[in-house]
Image (cartoon, rainbow, N blue to C red; front, side):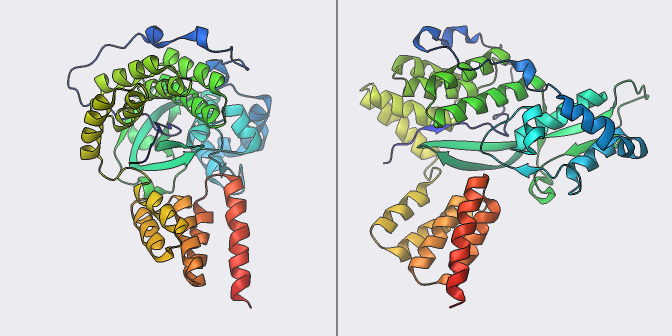
Length: 387
């Protein structure tokens, strides 16, 4: 069985709600911190900077869309400014999670970055707002031998806070969501507090820094995520992975065990704990937990994909195509699966299907670098069909 180390990449996900019917006490995270083992953070970690409004953002409100806000109202004016192709022209880019000011400056970000920027505008305008976790299908990605799970959040804009209507009117709210409507229509949503959004942002930064090899910085961001919201379980999982990478086996075990105490069916923490127990030489415990994990998740993320890669290495392109196709069936929007399916088709001299899946890979790429890579390869495939 392959080794896999999983992070809950909470770029756009608030974490699974506990199924317990009795509310649990908020944990005290200080006992999970081991600051002495890490060098100081290379940059300030300040929660107040996440929603800080820049002068450029104020200028945009006061001048660029001022007339639109007056004629359409604050909610609809802001909504249209964010969605209109003639206004901000926002681009989705999952490479890094940005704060409000940086997202506005570069006009791109992941869903969490875009929600944070929108919330910053709404606060500046005096609008009420509510963050929501959206129960979309679980999606996975990987970077630097780490596996990430992603979910989704959006934002509901309400009336201005000084509007003293008789009651809250849901039909006078607008939901801002950066996924296509068909992907979130009918999905279950639940409200979340801003400290969860803050913890998600910091957890994201920890994951991004970890995947780029900046282990010490990742620790401080994960630590601060728990300071901001001690009940946010994904950050315990993140902290455990950081300790695992830092060779602090006992500390990693403690973090994963705590996550499992709070959520006994947490597959991420369970899979990570298996690796820690194996590393510590506690093979029997690891095997027992692995049996439970395999029973709960017999076909983990990238299960078929890994077999497709193995078939490619053996030059068995037909088998590789079939494995990649199975992975595409259960994750139809993940670009890497379509890319490798295109490669398999190309090896089978099926250029038509290779072009089709390379185009899908490009359309679903989540970073500019990936998009440029797929576009170049698609151009080459298109050139082949013209000769």
